Image (cartoon, rainbow, N blue to C red; front, side):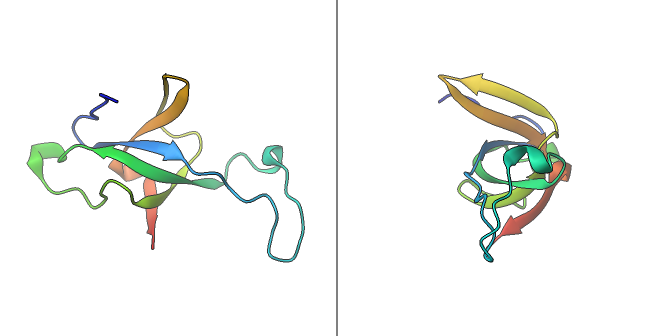
Length: 91
């Protein structure tokens, strides 16, 4: 893949989310579309003014589902977001 996000943007791919809670309750996808989602960082540019970005390729992060731009390449869906739209890194 030859997508390189520019400036302070990051390329993300959605990680399959679990629809069943630990207590066994099924939560359908349509139930709450505004909640944050888990993504994997696929590509990172060095950032504005070539400063180090706080995320790296392979990190799992939380970001809002409807933030920034969605792109589709070779049948795979990706999201390009500014670093400000990443809420947290999951360790």
